[in-house]
Image (cartoon, rainbow, N blue to C red; front, side, top):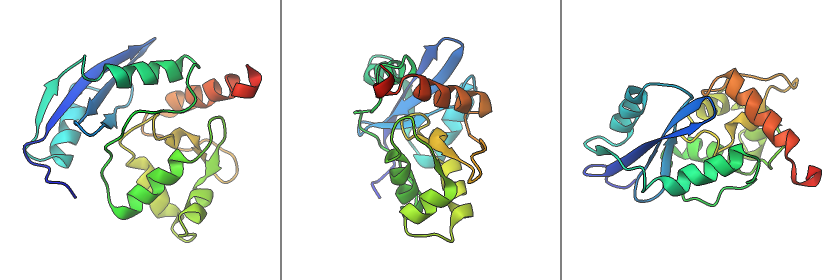
Length: 177
């Protein structure tokens, strides 16, 4: 893992319709997308836990590319993200988050599907915990994970956000355009 001291973490607030989301990035890429309408302190606490000794600086222009891609997605104009990501976690978390990134736009998978995908079929609960720790909502699409019975399950961004993201993807599937 890279030395995490003396890292500058940049942040901005993305405002889209009635949502305000705090975003942060390092020089390596996007590292955090917050839940809607949460206080800046949530982002600050997250950054200081993951990047001890780092500086947190507001830099709207530096994060513009991330804001633009997420807004394009929210407007139904983007189905795949091209931005660099700098998500850090355990090897297990990284395997789960990479598996989430492979779920196609407009499709859903179950926790069991993700456990199978990473070749840990008995680790369904651990998969759920790793999904809950996903630091980059929307861009690493944990909203596409549902219960085995098809029911919507928990989401760090809240159930309203999860429902809206899934509905957006169903309504804007490329074949429906």
